[in-house]
Length: 490
Image (cartoon, rainbow, N blue to C red; front, side, top):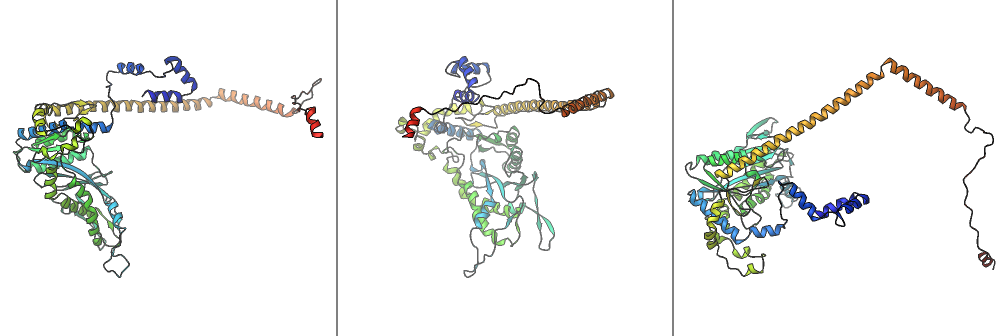
């Protein structure tokens, strides 16, 4: 920071830099100046800068993993999570069908090897059918809840799509049969999720979870993304008997609630399904939202299959809870020379750090205006965490209202200034129409005109007696030396 401020002072000019050096000395900005500035602002917190690789290494320590598995085991015992049908995870994926179709268009599709002309071409993308965001909630027993997708368009739910018949007439076709029973589709200007759409998705989860095993608690693992820490969303999940466990900081790729393989297959499968779908699109027509929903349904069917989902939970040790799935050798790589020879038993670490992990899951820590999950797993639906989230949202609401008041005051001040300028201009116009002011202005103009007439009758150069014209002195031309002239003569 001192270097940035020193460069800033230097860019202001030599005079400003000299003044700063005269005040501070050779060191333009000493370290004590920043320390005094921070003491004047008690709300500011001192943060020690560190590289991202260092934070990743700390998140991947055996102690961090042992605390996570200890907290996970404690939650499953506390809420009687005994079967795979009570363990859930949710994740979202972006499917860009426009890129998929462009990739498919590079190939030639013919039914006969002797024909050179392709049977079909890449169709033109219809408005709103170029991309979609898909979120799925999978269960450890291999099942999944209905899909929830967001496409480009004006806001609101999209239960129907308009389709043109061969005779030119249009009709509304429901999208539910294309995606799956109970699925929902929404529109947004940017085909992604925001806070409101996450709440709509939570309502969909609560509706389907409430109809299955209404008396049993279920566990859902989420990351520490701020959009998930909404009091309204967490309240809906808690009302549906869902316990939400927020994982520690995911700076380490080894700590995951579920393997990425099912969702990666969801993003990869549209390339195959789009190639199979293209022959069914008539030439000269558009690729509509119906075709996009067919691609999404095909990707969800193959990517989120029972085998892929069960293996995804098993590979990370999430369900069944098994810390032995984590390779301890990877946790000790890149830390230091002493860690390479360290012997680690995750089960013993879980037993030793279990009491500490159980104390931390219900006690939130606030950091930079949010719930901190650094090095700890937190039950987001607990009373303490929900109360802290309510306080944070209330503080944000107060700050937002104060900002609106300041913006309204600034807008009012600008309006007052504009009105005052208009009134001043109007008063000036009215003063210009006063008879006395007009007479004085005409008198000034006539006097100026008479003066210009007198100046026009005067010659440009008037002879004056005993006047001497003095010009500027001209420099004399330096002559050559005598020796030079003699040399030239020779």
